[in-house]
Image (spheres, rainbow, N blue to C red):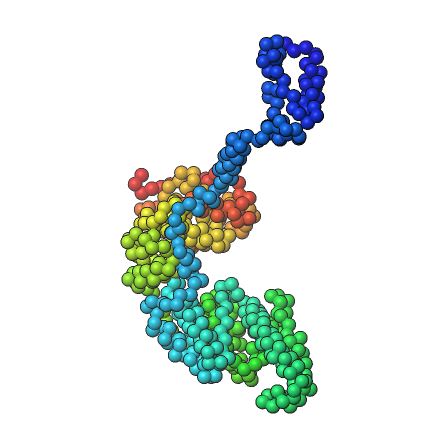
Length: 545
């Protein structure tokens, strides 16, 4: 056991370590013999670690110690790398399945559209007059979702613009998605701002040319001989005119202006210089449904007032009957040419998928049954190529998550289930409040073990839910209609059954997953306040009792 002088002795020993630059090495044998601990135990050897501060007998650094230190450092780095590995390091291991996933998205416009050559040629035949400086006929394109309408129209438009540049003919195509831009104000404002941007670019380019011409003309007036200007002053006047034009352009705000002012701004922007303009209105039926046909009337009649430019309209619609609601004058001028896109069959869908898969996936990433199965599923959905492409892309993404190198049939079937669930979620999310309450009533009954739910039971729970969130209660007949609408959407299954002398009723059951559907309903702020509702189930009079 150490006494109180140990510390003083250690201090004394430390103070004698260096004398005239030499290290004093204690006699370890003597220390051991006397029973004292070696004072250097556990204390680093300064001469070894740092080298001598002077003196001829200083020892050199042992290279083996450096090697050990380096090895320890490397091992420490390995431990650090192992600790820093995260989720993405593991997910990035393995060979990729996709080479270019973007070609499977709806926004991609391919250079070749199989089985749409006839429709593309028809569009080109109509629009070629724009390259001659004439006004093309207005075109209406019909077809169900996923039949290649938008892709074909964009392909033809890109070809039209590239050819116009080749032959130096001023021709422009402007695309508007009316599902997003669905009011007259928004359509006109978006078009006006696009043309204002283009006009400003034209002015800036012209100002640059004229400024350069003026500088050269000041040095040598002969440069004006082959131009429309006879003097430097004339060039200056034109520059000032262009600068004034640029100052007059004013971007249209997305709200706040009277509609006639927006139209006037759009009209002036379009007519600023000579050109043929094709306005492509995708989902045109959504614009008519939301805002009526005033926009189409103004656009289809503006050629009679334009002086420098010409406008043609290309409308794209999923609804073959939307023109039935148009003013006869609009209908006659808008539908000068009509092109119908029929649904794809399974073989055509297979060709489309093969064409895209060659670019989208790495070699050998798909088993032989993947594309036929995707085509078969999509053919059941009225030949929807967009659905087929989504299915193939989702199957590839699921295979990536499984960290496998190949997409197989199982991934396609999982993708089909996932897409169907996503569709149901979107449909439920966009239901009106009253339909959501009816659906929530059905879910409540099923969660409480009620089978073969009838309309009266649904109405009973529906009434209590309306009272709870302070919503007007519809009649039972109207609720029955809402149940039929849910049946048409594939959310519930409603079958009319006979109860003998007690009459007929609907037996209702859910066709969608309860948990996911309930979660979507509860995301609605009005329904989120609903507390647990215990249904009162009326006594049943089944015909077999």
